[in-house]
Image (cartoon, rainbow, N blue to C red; front, side, top):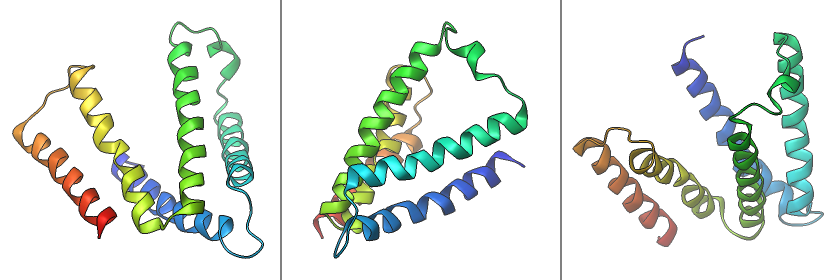
Length: 141
């Protein structure tokens, strides 16, 4: 499957995460956001273990890989980010929380440009600026 189809699948699947977690963590008989994070990401781990097993990949050989520290740090950032995201969803509207959270796409692009020396075109910079404006408009409206 091409990367565009994978990206569309990711979009469709991830679109449902915020509304579903908001429903689960709000109102009567709600689940605490930390518990929802544990349960939801437990499913992620189980699915990933199934995929790694199916593809025959051996994760243990990468535990001490020279780049493993980057993976471990990314995992810590992911854990903090998802815990904070689900907590925000339990306290605020999806229509505000999700666009703010989604700004990680823009800030990651900026890090890519500044730290990883990725090319920065006028069009890319305009897109980053417009994304910031759109989040401001959505979250203050």
